[in-house]
Each structure stands twice: as C-alpha cells, then as structure tokens.
Image (cartoon, rainbow, N blue to C red; front, top):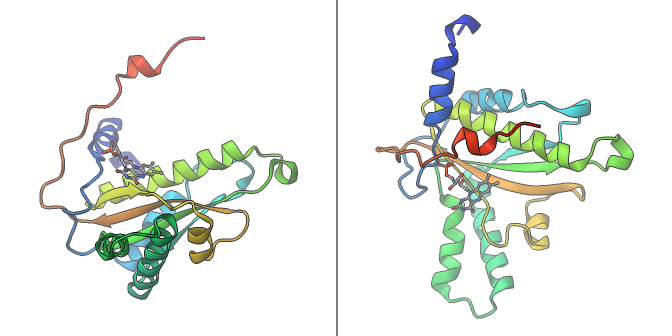
Length: 196
Ligand SMILES: Cc1cc2nc3c(=O)[nH]c(=O)nc-3n(C[C@H](O)[C@H](O)[C@H](O)COP(=O)(O)O)c2cc1C
C-alpha cells in the first residue's frame, strides 16, 4: 500500500475499531508465519530512545503450549497447595487460548548502563504492542492481551526461560471471531488533554 492510500480518517477509523476479543469466541486460524513477521515488523516501528530494542516476542508453538500448560499448572500449584484437579486443568488450558499465541517480553537495561530510564523502555515496549495490535486489526485478526495471576512469579519467569534483565509483559492471542465485540466507551479526549 502506498503511503498516500492511508488517509487520516481511515487510519483513525482503524484505531477506533481495535477492540479486545473474547478468548472463548476466538477460533479459526491465526496469522501465518509470514504475517507474524509483518506484525513484528510493525511492532518494531515503535519509538525507541537509544535504540535499545527493550522488548522481544516469542511465538508459542504447539509443543510450547504443552510446556506452557505444565508451567501454568505448576504456578497454580505454587499459589494454592490445595488446588483441585479442575482448577489445575483450567490453569493448564490457558495455554491453548487463541489460535496464535505470542508472548511479549521486556528486555530492560539499567539507566546507569544506558542513560535511558527504564520507564522509557517500558513505553517503547507498550508502543510495540499497540503497533502489533493495530496491524493485526488491519489484517482482519481479532486480538486479546492478557497477563493473569502468577505470570510475574519467579517460577513463571524461569519456566519461560527469561534472562535476568527480562520481564514477562503479556500474552497476545490472535485469531478470528464470528462477531466482534462492540468497542467499549473510550475516554473523552477532553478528559485526557489539558493545557500547561
Ligand atoms: C499488559 C496488559 C495485560 C492485560 N492483562 C489482562 C488480563 O490478564 N485479563 C483481562 O481481562 N484483561 C487484561 N488486559 C486488558 C485487556 O486486554 C483489554 O485491553 C481491556 O479489557 C480493554 O478492552 P479493549 O482493549 O477492548 O479496550 C491487559 C491489558 C494489557 C495492556
């Protein structure tokens, strides 16, 4: 698509049409490997002070979902020694939500080393996430961002194979929904803007 084909109106319309899908309603196929690459390329246009690339994505494979399910179960057991088999199975099933499952990881470096505050690095990771969601919306995919209880536990961190300086930020599920949810009310622009 040439740059002139995108009007401000249709870009804003696209942004306004992004809405989180229900994971239960999500089915069909997710993006192909090539489309995932395009989504990551969109993510990579995030503003990035010092070009630190303070984030990365992992795509969870079918085998990865099995291991992730084991991990969810282990984390649930760690949180609740008396968890019922049903609760553990529910925890395990979270690994299978959404036809395509990505993990967003923050790879933050200290301000002392880089001169870039960690807050700014987190903003970059958030912008990368939003770029990916908007690009997925433009491709016709439904999406949902989740984190969940226990996702910040040391066990989860270790199980995902994260480095010391890395932080789990969220999952991104991508797929299709028969009926998109109506967009929730958004904040009034006037409530977000003041003058200084
Ligand atoms: C990093 C991050 C983690 C999130 N984790 C969850 C979650 O675990 N469960 C949930 O219901 N919503 C979670 N949300 C919020 C939803 O993804 C969604 O954005 C919110 O319900 C608002 O809906 P909307 O995206 O349609 O505006 C998370 C959002 C972000 C940015």
